[in-house]
Image 1 (cartoon, helix red, strand yellow):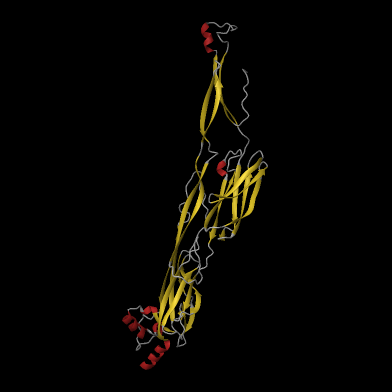
Image 2: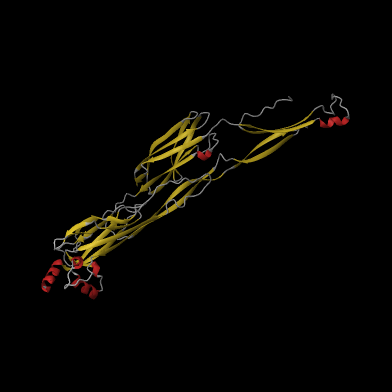
Length: 422
């Protein structure tokens, strides 16, 4: 053994370079070697890299939850997180911070034993603005502690804040509604280049300094990327009185019950330039067909970062779960509100109609119909129908449409007409 070299106590890589001469030929006490060329192999050179590994130290953001995960504006959600000290040593006074779309909302400090997992919170958070809120837990955000892997220092969850509007039977004439909201996603955008400086001394006593650069993949660069999402809701409606179907008084049939007033309504409609299927008699029915269409680009444009970031918040937004029709008579007096039935489609694109009801004809035959029966006492004028949706989507979008049906005479006019033809 030629000697012993002590390296530093700090974790890191230590580079050692050694130049040694055995039996230096110029030294006065050298041993005699023969021939003289034997002195040429007396020099030794060596280089080594010794890495002193730090004790395992990894602070991990394990989870964050918001309960409930959907609230109305001004409501509260209880936020709870978990953080683990996956280390061989204790970590004291660790900073833990929570963000709402990159804005700090809460912070605390915790001390951990080796391998310990602690709960952060719960604390009540108030949703002051509508939209999807990306709630983020970040452990040691100021990089105060030894942490060999900072790519797991962030965890996220989402909480939806809606307006709490109610669309049931509301009176309006807004067939389309749109909304948008922004979400901030933490993403890893790169890794820092770091360096260390060291030195070595050669046999001639000279000290040489050098710098080594390396990429630190355990300390990623995080950045918040805001993304804006949109949604759109549309409603359309059609009324149909069936009075545009012509009948033949000389050849009556059971289906004539759909349009017994057509003998007078069709000529009236042609003369007035109106649609006979939007005119009826007092006491007859109105069919209603409503279509709703909802679409959103929610999380179709999640930003792409390194190591699988950003983390999607998940969740799905849908169109309205209910549609209502409110009927007003020809004097603008409220009669009734009816909840429509979904007869086809899905949660985003659907067709809605009046519920099936049983009706008995003059002949005593019972049949089913999706009609709203007007009052037999209604005066000539216009029945108005307000169609409205329940709140839909992220922004509680509500759409409404107004339709009208003209009352032209009474169902008893058709009874008298039948009598006159006998």
